[in-house]
Structure formats: structure tokens, C-alpha cells
Length: 352
Image (cartoon, rainbow, N blue to C red; front, side):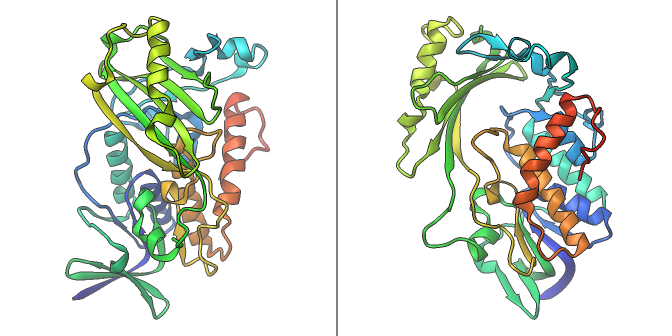
């Protein structure tokens, strides 16, 4: 069995893993990305990518090689009270320079991974890693990939909710230490929808439930709901049928609209957990969805995932023994959102 040595092994090539690999490689580190598959089913994201996410990537929307919708934040509506952002923040919105970008998520992920590879990271596709494939010895991590063993002094887990690195070194018998958000979403033809283009709804009695309708491109609309899990949450707790009835009552969809006639997806997203996601010696880090960086008031996890990858890469490059990735993540996001809102007029708000 051949052995290949690196500075960093990143397990998972999604937005968090590819961002970590790209920024680490740019700083002269030898990085290998182990990505589960080279072919993912195409999916649209119903959680947009904001301006501050592009800042975190050190990229601009114009760099993206594919088409995407780019509504201004003014165009978003709260369904419950019919209010738009200019109605809620009349004094601030004239200075607000924020758009939301809806790329094809599959194209977006592949593009980020190619950028990491172009920046110097080695990308291995179709590599299914299990917890038992990972060992630690002689101050290095050893990951079996077929007939090869990849070793590195630092291991990064970025493979989502079933991340093998998390399961190998951080998972406890009690399971995930934070909350989980359960969601369900139907993708229907735009022609069957007459409501606002991008809207949110928070009118449920259970305040942990919210809903959305987003026109995401290719003539499609996404209609979905989500609920914070208490460990006993079931699909009915997401109030999807209740929201469909609300949409019918508002004439956003026809009375005979049937979700079962359209593609439906769902799943779970890990929410903010109090537990640290780095080992004491900073030799192993968990980032992105695997680390549950999403908070109750930040329904878009892509920004947190990408930024966690960049912060992780910078910490490794500095040799930071106490990177405090989680503590640094959300203040940065708040500051960068504020910078976007104030059109860059606050120079003391520095980026990463």
C-alpha cells in the first residue's frame, strides 16, 4: 500500500471543504481533498448566497461562470404582513447594497471545488471514507483510500451531517449536542405559483416553524417549511400542509395544487452546538454542516460553511493552537453584513 503525505487532509469537497482547501493551498500548504463522489444530483438552493459570502470567498458574483438569479434584498417579502424591507427599515434601506444570488447548487459546488484544485489542492473524487478508514499514529492522521494511505498532520472534517471525521473523533453516545432543523420542500413549475418571488412566513403558532417560497430558476419555485427539532419532532410538526393551505387561501397556488405531484425533498440540518469542534492540539477540525454552525436566526448555512472553511485554513496556516473557529464565525458574519448595509463606509470593520 503506497503512502502519500500532506500537510492537511480535508474530508468533504462541499462549500466548506473546498473553501478550506483553496485558502490553505494559497498559503503554501499541501492539501488533499477527499470528495465522496464526482457526480451529484442537480439541486437548487432555496437559501440564497449573500454579498458577504462572496467577500468571504474573496470572489465576486461576476466571477461565477453560470447563470443565476440575483434579486435585490428589497424584493423579499414577509408573507404574514405583506411587508417588504423598505417598509420595515425605511431609513436604512436607501443605503442597503445587498443582493441574494441563486446559483444551481450543484454547479456552484463543482465550481468551488475546481477553484480549490486550480489553487493547488489535490482533489480525489469518488472517495468514500468511513470512520474506520481513519487512524492516528506518530503524530499524523492516516486515511485509507483504496490501495493508498494519505497522511497529514492536520485533518479537517467537512462531509456534512454524516461526516466520518466527526463520527470518528467527536461523536458521543448521547449524539449531536445541539439542535437539528428538519425541513421539507416541494419544487413545482413557476407557472403554478402566483405569489411573491421571494418570501418568508413566520405566522405559525409554533415559533420554531417557518416557511418560504423562492423562485430559484429554470422555471421552478420552491415551497417549503422547517422546524427546530426537540428530539421528538415529526414531519407533521413542520406544518407543511398548513402552509400549503395558507398559500391556497392567498391564491398563491391553485386550490387543486397537490404537492405529491411534484418533486419533494427534505432532510435535517445540524444547528449551533455548544461543543467545540477542534481538538485541544488543533490537529483536527470539524467545519461546515458537520459542525452545526447554523443558528436559529440564520437560516442560510452556506455562508457559515464557507467562512468556517476560510477561518480554519487561516488558523492552520498560522499554526494557531486555539483557533476558536466558532467564536470568530458569527461576529464576522454580523460585521460583514453590517459592512454591506453601510456600503463600506465603516473602515474599522475588517474582513478575515
